[in-house]
Image (cartoon, rainbow, N blue to C red; front, side, top):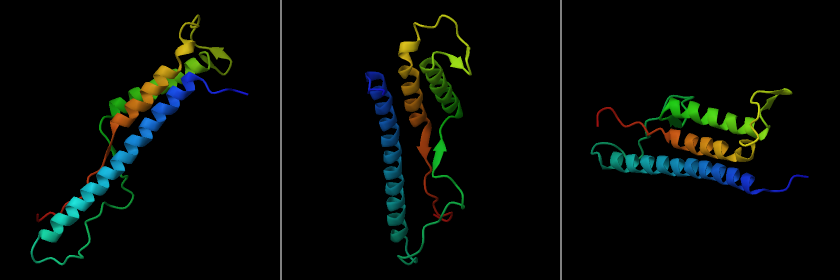
Length: 131
């Protein structure tokens, strides 16, 4: 049975940073919605219970800042997975004499996960057109 190694702990920590970033973005979205609701209450002539404008159905709550960063992060994670598998794909070794890189498989995976966390942002709530 595999035991927990330092490399695995580094990857798990990077994934925890990713999920912490997602949680922070969700909190940021809630704060934006609260601030918008308070602004709407201050507008004269509108009831306090008027609903907030909504995004169209099916709109994801997150946006991508840069697709280039997403592609780079995916490539980094794939490179790390290849290094973890000793550069074999279906019993075919794609990189010869790469024994020096194999022990560092966790670095590109962790960097890719953190870069992906940086590339994602929250979609701000819609404001009224007349405001």
